[in-house]
Image: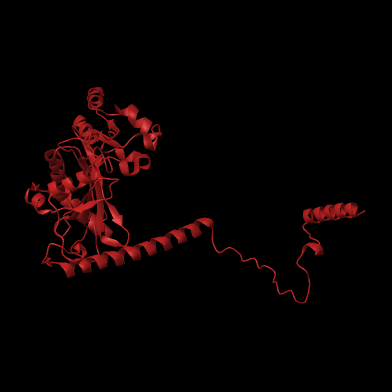
Length: 351
């Protein structure tokens, strides 16, 4: 009898739930001492995308505030310790002004930590982290980022080579581009394939083009986006083979912003392998210095490079470099008037 009553209650509850009702026995007990309030359904104030954007903006604001406070604190600490030298051989390094190490000294320290009995990473890449100056004459205007491409005197053969597509003038140029290492090369046929999305975004890294494509290359803007060849990014020229060789064998440099600190940007590059000879690593390092100083925006006030730290993961050690030897050997490059005019126009548009 009890089993039959239980099954009846279950069936009744099921029918009621299907009809959108519920039994009194399934609700909270209706007693005077019951202070439980019914849940109030609040209508949504925005879509899921708007809420997600609001959360991201809030997190970005918190990060920017923290970065700004840390940057200002570090600057104040450096100004306080500037010129302060220890009087004894035993001292806390954090209490005194620490000059940067010479390049050879930093390499020696990293190699000591990379020995077989420690991290065993002598063949790992040697990283250099540049802090770049982005300030202009106007205190409220800053350079957004730094971009350049350089062919190092000692190529980084241990990392994958960039994949380059070449829009050529004719079949002869296409064959020369393929011999220089292009992923694919052609003229109208390749242009049509690019226009119809025959290449996936992750299948290539750069696109270079002959000067004859200058007037029609803008049709690919919706496909190539920031990879569109222009005279400003030096991916359009009369010698397509030279362009292919430059981007296949070179290194692309692009700085990243520090949220909340527009005065500086970070730039991470690979100098070579830690086991390389000092002279080879020094040549590549000097090449980076020359390229950054020569390709910096004409609106930058002062030197483009503020500091450089060497590291070799996974050691975790970072050593501040003395910049004076590199700055003395800088090879001055006179910027052409066209690039200066382009930057002036860009500044006017931003303003």
